[in-house]
Length: 553
Image (cartoon, rainbow, N blue to C red; front, top):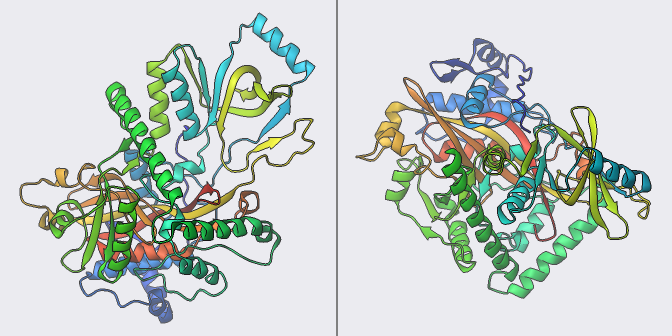
């Protein structure tokens, strides 16, 4: 995950390549215009909405062209599409965002029993080359946090953190660090029934403010039928929690919020350390707000009441706040919001920054291996404890004695081949929730921005990370700022955008390029962001990201 960014330009047709750069704006190419003239139905079918009169012709044209691209994109778990190579390269250089053509799973890891050959080799190596026992961690963010905990809490421990150097699906996450209840307090029974219905018949228009893709894929095929027990457990737990809660919020959500508060406080402590030692943040914690158009205000208020009961500090904000700290189009849209002052978001380079901090702070006790493939975890069958690991480093196999092992390797990547198990199946069968995720740019002319900036503020102050905040709505779009670029006439604001929640079947079945997310989410993001804010929004990259869940999500 620490290798250089992979760059990819997806081949697209002349009609798709309808954006060209001209003084930092996009205009339709002649090829695209000619094709539209030859096929007038294309234009008619691009949007089912009458676009707001407040939109400039440039914004309307940009919206239609982006919509056409999103409708044609092939969205799969294994692939990412880059729409604008130039903008994407500039964004990655500024923000540390990683882009790749395909996800690369972490190396398959097998659990094996300790045998006499391994035991004698461990004894021989410890004598001849003095290999020390270590606390071994491998994988992504969770693993490097475990390494941090070992080193920070015990001055005697020596720790190894290994990664295979590949871009992981974690690098395409929403980067959100916020207090959030379980689904029991976000959804009602009607939401759950609607999610099931939409798998059979979904004629909703994603170009609306209240589109939500929450879905539980059900179909008569082996992959989804294998997951049917998980869906039944999920539904049964949903009914149980709602019944126990009555008119109150659920106890399980209250417990989750308490853990999230503690987790964010711990991240804040690490952030203070990396800023002091390196001058680099791992997060920004200035709050987040949830917004709604006038038609969706009842759902926003319901969320505010629910989250306040859960102990999440939240408060309604007025138009003055929104004008000072957002880019909402308050001149043309009636927008409401509540503010959560303790929320945060993470930097795309969080893992690299923590690794650098550990290298600087614990040079004698921390070993980082940036291109190591963990292949085996050796278990002592008498104690069921890990005693060694095998890994490939620079084409050499290393057998390393360990005191403990902690890995975060991605979905279904640990296989048990211990003799007493008699099975080579995945050790952990996981259910995933999948969201569309991508990097977007919001282009605002300097004239428009200057008209918006409150008196006494500079553009730099207004666009700073301490002032402009991440935001979301109650239909599951999340907007996380990445960086800002300025030229003679415009500001380009880069963001990570996620939307959607599709409960997918076991990841082994869905990892082969299946369509696992909802294209409607992308269309909804395009519509909602352009409607809600000033400037012009365009997608730069589009893909999907998964997270593992249990019955409590």
